[in-house]
Image 1 (cartoon, rainbow, N blue to C red):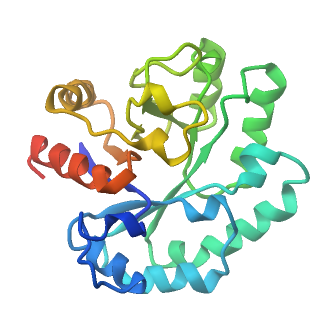
Image 2 (cartoon, helix red, strand yellow; image 1 turned 90 degrees about the vertical axis):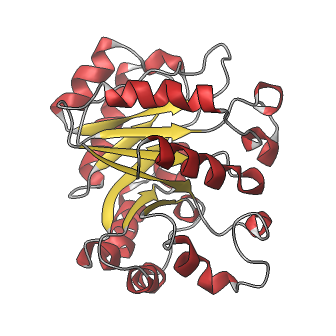
Length: 255
């Protein structure tokens, strides 16, 4: 089983001195990042669909073998109105990454308010179609999605279920490893329960300890022989904690 470990985003100013040298230009952060990791989630695409030239530049900066997962735009996951035209624009923006074999999937993170219903399940299927031909992964925040109907539909349509680690709060998904599509996909958000609701960036202010990381390593190890690949992304990005935990996890897997 191939294991890829990285962070959810990379261009954070508060990583200077924690991961990046203080003087590194923002435009050189990706160059520095890829010296340490071979995959990254691009989260800026959630806020704004970039010009294709932006992603073309990212593709040129990275060496063969580096892999991107790109977060779906908020129009698809949060606004959910008149999505066809923005979806076409989004697919066009991704072509430079795909053409250089850097793009390995789209990750659609739906909000906690997006709860299970037959109509919402049908909407997922439409999203899957709109994001063709790229691998498509879905992150749910509400635990109503952890049910047979969801798993069966996602498996039938080759959508990947994003397993998450977060605070143990009522209504949030529990830390279960679920695989439904092209491979395993895990996002670790931290367990900052005090700031999860309305905490802004402090929501992701959390550093995992060794025992907590080992919980996930044991779950992932049990997948050997079942899946060919697992992506593990750390989203506890406050003050570079994601970098430290990603490195910790890489050591556990001898990467």
